[in-house]
Image: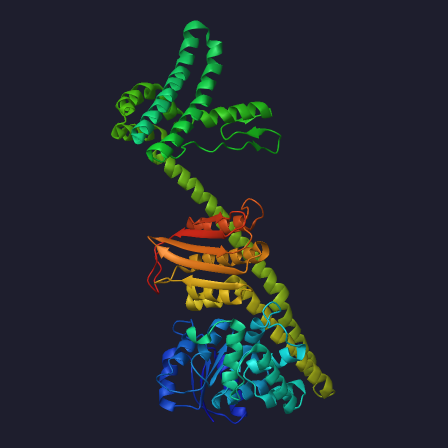
Length: 215
Length: 383
């Protein structure tokens, strides 16, 4: 699987590159700024891009903007890494279609989960940081009427995990997870969808009580 | 017809005031002619005291009736400074007795204020000049009424120098406040770093060096130590993230005030609608101040208002940035109670900004921040 990596801090760039290579990814280019990133994406047309949100020259959200300018490389899966995660950016990314990820940089410490997220995004799936979901599921915002178990399933589902992975994380059978998801969707009045990205969108739109497509 | 009666009525009231002023000025003169010099002193005191009252009434009436706002020009009364040797320093001289110090301080304050002498000039001249100007207005002619207002302003408003002095004093105060706030902030950051990330990184180092020692002998213990080091490193990152968020939220640097307010709305427990438009970026310091002031207002809404919905409106018109936070809560908020509004005021003062609270009983409550500021185009800041 071919990857382009954009990260301006040498230590992290090097570390993530080694980590990805160690897991059998083919890192075709590493860059440390926005303009180079765009050039690398156009030149290499990778299967997935792993991008630090804050890149030179502007040190603002250069990486995110490069990722959102996907008209140049249509359908390119993008995983955004950031020192902070905010709902606002998650919404913008998700509104741009499937094959997106948005994770805290800390997540690279947990290699297996990180690599799994990269693979998921590359395959057109979704990876939203648990922290974003936690911000949306604070006690005074969480949907009423769900059991504790259903809330657990909802939180994992909203990160873009498949039923199989949710089952594995919660030590449940895949069958009972799919039963839970059906119940959750019924309780929230949402239309269930086997597509994990659409599922994320539906849940986030519900939690924000705002249509995500308006941003 | 009614308008004419109104103007005439006001003229008569002003003329009555002039008679009072004339009597007041005549008092020390009469005392000097009829009695001796000892009684002159209290008479002069009465003149100065009552003179200020008369001048204040005149200023207010010009503002209300002629639409000519006149600012009070007097210097603020200086406080007495007790010295270590139980003497008092008035700003000009030392006194052992508190009473004499207070008297001396009062005289210095009043007599050295040019506004006192301008008041006196006004008291002597106005009964004649003011009456001549106002006489035609008694018949309902509005123009002399305005001439009279301008004449009053000429003597009773602060001179340019007094205005500058007042401005310099205000700037010195806000500068001190800003520097104090900055020092307190740095102290907080230093403490947070020391107790938070720094301590955790030391723990990581310790775990790693222990692991290194155990490497040959006890692989199980090493695994445990490494897991511990990783958990502590993650924890250090989390505390750093919280700390940075409190210094300057990253979204503010990355996107500016509008998106930062939008995110604030998203993260708020109540339903917050944010209507914000800004054609350019603000200077970073101002962005921060307005962001934290708005965040504070939103916290106040959650704490006190019992509101269901909040609206945040940000606009920039005619060189003024205005943020209005409206809630549908219980109202009756009193800015004098609690320290929230004062904290916001302190945040905005270095930018000549103000906060205004309008909260009738039963609501709605509107809190408005206003900061005069020229908007800069993106990437330049000239404010």
